[in-house]
Image (tube, rainbow, N blue to C red; front, side, top):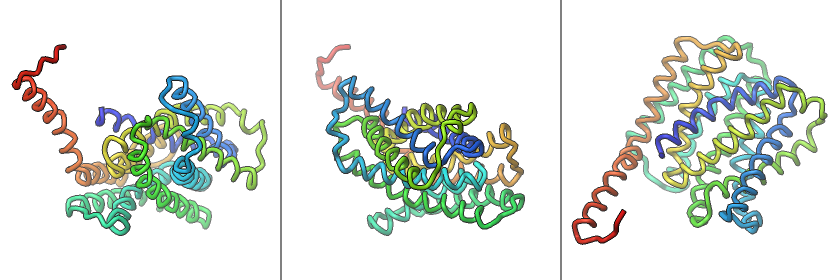
Length: 318
């Protein structure tokens, strides 16, 4: 399930970059659109979890939910949505791939955790792939000041995201008895509210813009698939593994984002993109090789343990 959910998450997040781009290209106010997406998704998920008696209303009163929402949802996606007004979905996806490197650096510098040489090499290979993906866009795009600022905004958002990913791991440990889906829903509610607040001070929102069919379709897709499905999968993977492993979707999803951008939105990609994609996948596997080995060995250990228990006279039946 870890492997299956990981690839599902990569596919979902790979398509969201283009969905965001389509929305903002058709005059959707970026902060309000992001707020509507996350608040709606969070509210629906949280009400569902309360109805199933897997979450309590008191969870919304915990400061951890506000902090997580401010980092993972508000800070990251306010900057990403704003930036996609000026950069292509492919470039935004590629720049987002810096997240795992920042997480690893924070673990080393702030948490004083040691990284293996293999992990560092994998990060470097992955980043070389990111550069190969960026290069064609740098050549073809008439890079103005807003394009450069947009790129910088995505990178700053990834710094915020990395802090949030590490903080999320501690939150899931402290709230081990609470469903990760409920935790995810609560943080999206707070992130959405903060985005609404930012929109109120910076944007002019009209119903005509929001009800335009393309904008509405983008919002529904991002709410249901991008937030309710994708972010729940991410939260679940963080709880089951570590902050770095699920965050490597930022290496895989740019390939998906670039591909669908070319096929469905007229964005361009050449051989550099193919080479970059190969490097990204290789770097992802190399960076997380130890974690992957542990995850693959876990079923074998459980099977051996069950057999040992059966051999010592266990009477548990099927």
